[in-house]
Image (cartoon, rainbow, N blue to C red; front, side):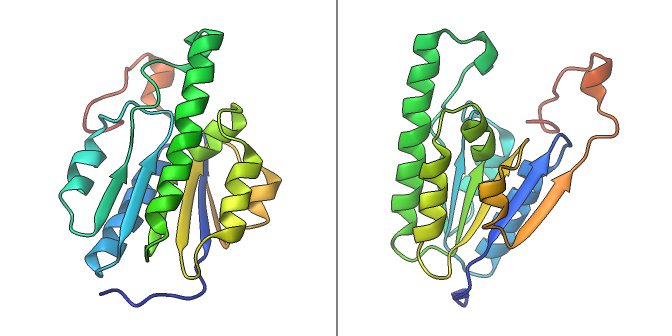
Length: 178
């Protein structure tokens, strides 16, 4: 069993560059490889990305990845946005509950975007960070970094896009971008 680190830091991977989710998955694999209990939760995704299949096969990893969206939020009706917000808030609460029994790492992938879009209250996220179990490492990813989250982070890594195939019309590719 992985040694429980009593300091439990917050890791933030943010920015417009590729690699935020990949870095979070890598840390989840590392923690699980050392016998840690990992909860991995994705927001604003459809629940069908390739990393979920790999993580599901690892001992000690629990997925908390209800499909919270099927299309971009900019294409949603007000009713669809409200339903998405309800699902995202419920998912954050469920992920927090899953960690109450001795988890070593919680990944909240794209939760910063859910906060930015007001689908999850920033206060709901910061309240959780302030009251999380001792020793729980938490990874947050997204395109923006609210100052309230930065103030609570032990690690902040900014991913900066210099070039991406999407900008020249190449669609997201299975096994690479999702």
